[in-house]
Amino acid sequence: MIKIQDNNKEEQKLTFLTDMSASLANAIRRSALEIPIMAIDEVEIYKNDSALYDEIIAHRLGLVPVKTLKTSKEAKFKLVAKGPKTVYSTDIQPAVGSGQKLPITILDDKQELEIVGSAKLGTGIEHIKYSPGLIYYTYNLTPEIIDFVYVDDKGKILFNEDELKRKRVSADVMEKIKKLKNVDQLHFTIESWGQIEAKEIFSRAIGVLNKNLETLQKALK
Image 1: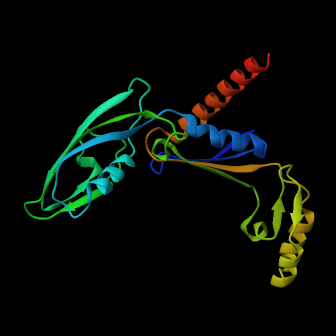
Image 2: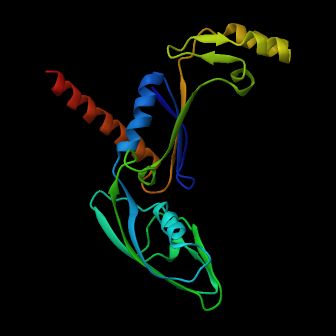
Image 3: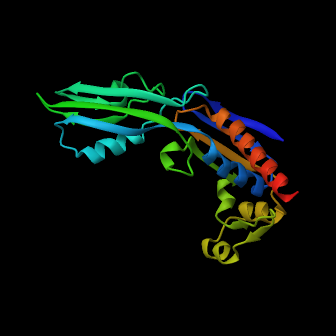
């Protein structure tokens, strides 16, 4: 069961309730790091008059989300700017496509920046710059209760009795806690960095997981 709670394309965020097990949710979360994602990998800095070292500029460029298409395996780019101005990721040509205006450096009057480089496909298990986004899940507990309980891998609730006594929780909250027996739903959230859509992260992570399971099954035969 999957019940969509929010699919905000502007914020590139997808949240839903699901009755999948925590072990499956964690497997999907980890599988997202094996989705091929485009990121800036090599740069040649011909001129850098800014206050930042070349290494810092290169690091910031590496973390710029690059729109990832299934048909693209490598892309060339250049970044040429003259001050006074703030240099943003939107100044990269051709445009990286994610639409995010991220600051790279600041140029004063007569200062220049000239860079050429390339972006390629990679996976998050190789380097975090290839990560497609942030994926996390929590048990579907209300905020007023979550501080006082612990849920194990099987969904069994264990009470933090010392915390209950110390904070002297209200009778209303105590009554809600007493009624809890198990948790059968997870609150699953996917936040995309912008390379691919959040819903695509979910579907492609499942595809990666299925492929790995097929490989494992063949190896066991």
